[in-house]
Image 1 (cartoon, one colour):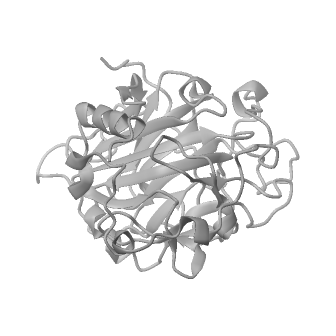
Image 2: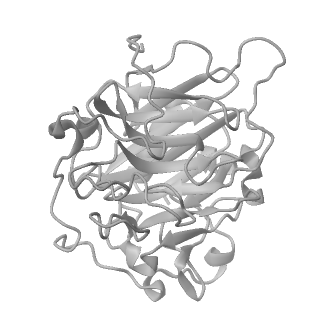
Length: 349
């Protein structure tokens, strides 16, 4: 049963809005583990070492995805399939063919650190020069001002799910390179999300993130049904560092039912108790007409490990590794989340 405590709403990741100056540093800046350079497994993997061959390249079998979820898999990234001749692009293993860019780090962002027995490499995202204003943070995604038509499954969508493996590998949240204050930090850590149809590279339709909720950082599912409309946030009650312990792979899932106005969070296949930050109807789902769908626009892209995948601004970078990211066009059940977790960890063929 969900905790019905109500938190103050924060669309906390919005550009230009930063953490309250009075927020204790212990809640915001936590040294999670050693540096990227010091991690022995964090060796860049070349395209030749990960490039697919033969029939598997043209027809991905998606062996790490539970069979019951495969037909709903719009986009999927295991970071073991660089585009032929371009290690800075990752091939989509879902049905949409939405390839993504490995921004600023290119092929060096693939590291030998698989999240589960069936994986050999993952993606490293991080800040490069956190004390300088610039656009050099490592992140991934794709962006188009006219919308990404291969993501049309999220155009007038009734439901969605984001799944993936995440491991924090440094200090999060990162130093805020958009302000002059030397100790100011972002109030959010970007994990993975689908952008709205009018997004500037930040606003989302569906998102997994760590954000400031009533003065405390929480793992959240954040959704927006109508482009330009209000977002709703479902925040885990558990402390974010308990959900995402340093240097430990965790399988997170966020589900979004835009018609019912509900979201859910899961860790390693099990539901996380939480609460909504708003108690009214931010998605405007009450009353006719039915069903309630997302805006009739193609998302402008996907963002991974931070915002602005078009590389125009740094925002909410994640010093972390990501593996087997999956974007589905329905809200999977709790049973299916557990099945996917067990499928991956048991390394079924």
